Length: 220
Image 1: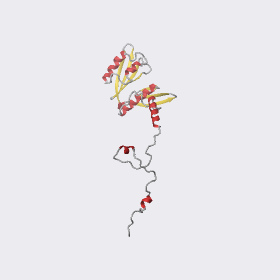
Image 2 (image 1 turned 180 degrees about the horizontal axis):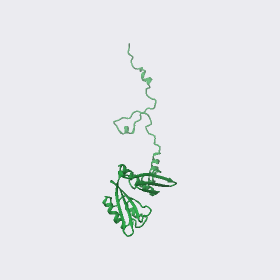
Image 3 (image 1 turned 45 degrees about the horizontal axis):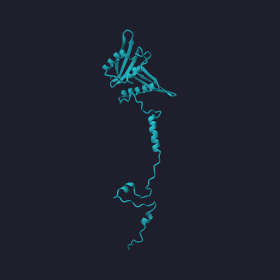
Image 4 (image 1 turned 90 degrees about the horizontal axis):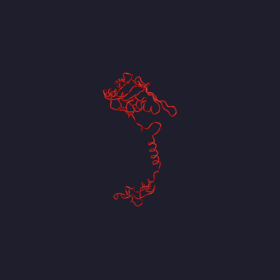
């Protein structure tokens, strides 16, 4: 999700408020992060006082640690972890009935989620894996992608329509007789139509080898 989306869905009202963004935005700008980047916010146990922002960029993973103390106010400390130095764990997925759960270790943190959050964690993890391996990054948000569980609603409709048209039997060809002219031959006056003949007509191999009675025989 974009940073602006995380701000709108923050578990604490002022977790990403104006005062916090006043210290987060400058450090992101110094590290050449775009204005509204794709990030993952790990709220932790106390999102009102501390949490971590992960922002992938071509150079590496930007890690922003946000801390808020009463009298001093919010503070932000950021660093870039190069992709070759990034510490990754396994991406584990588990299902239980209609629910799915995911766990992904990134640096010293663990990203967890269930259902829709699990989907978001999975997409973010695949982006991280692609960046570490030097491959093109997949899309952060791909709601229309087909999952292994089956096609989406639009995909089911398209598949149903294709099945209906493909199941119709092909009409038999009108030129079923051997040697009958094809439509292309009939449309071209330069190509005369071949006379129709039924299967089995014409000279057989034995007749072709037998000399004709009208042909004069040569004397020895």
